[in-house]
Length: 156
Length: 215
Image (tube, rainbow over all chains, first blue to last red; front, side, top):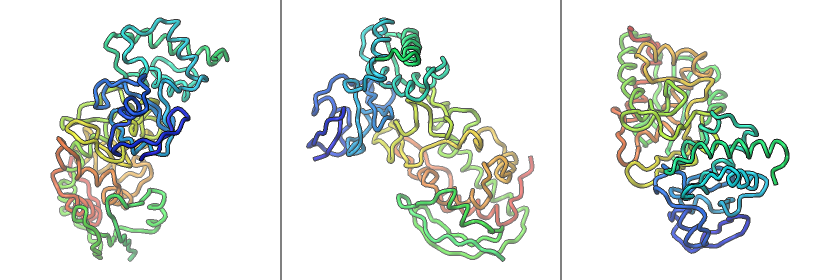
């Protein structure tokens, strides 16, 4: 059994230690907000936070997460999560939506580390998250909107 | 004559860090007694007297240069602010940047994909516990450097982040990130010399006077 803490809840999962964390999150625990995209750390759809960092869960063996804090899109804390989700809705960002949970998890790291990101900061953070619908301009606007809300203290 | 003796190095157990290296190396001079390495095998003490040999020193550097410029080494010593990847040393995808300490930025930190060990499979992310680029203050550029330019750079502590030749020798001999170049994982070529031969050439270059090859 491998002990995990996912979204502040503890789990003991009976899986091989080399099972990708993504499969455990989706199939064993049942949190399906995190998506499978490429399986090779290339697209970012599977992004979750491991001790606060935006890891690619498709290439992360579950044993790496043992005893550490995993956060998925379902458990993103409101202090960053709500301003981002509100901005995503306001800018009508998603088209098909498949990549969006990974996009938001990456953006949350950006806003945690820099309160008013520039376009260059957004490029440096978000380029690794691919959106085949091409919603990049709306993602950029939504991040700026969320950052503005956070700086005004209107993030929920 | 001062001497430096290091006793042990093994992949997965080395605990060498630069600040410690600096303490151990205080007072060390060109006459070095270093462990010789044969790939991962460790521990063979040698005591070598310094002897200025310009031709031998330059020959040794030119042999080591082939390793310095190999993708396994050069990909983490780029001329720009982004790592390189692949056998053709193309700029790393995903707009990955060096960051303030050489470990990436924001959601694109090195260890988000590059873990302690390789992910199985061709073209999957290689791993190493020390995965990083040099810091932006001392980027230690290899890409595009001629033998003369690279040798001059390695001799200049102002361009190595204050690292001495002895410390550079320790980096190539013991840093797990360097050692990992000889266990590159599927689809990636090893450098053209064995790790042991590479360390011996770098050591010989230094011991014989650290002479710079002609431009």
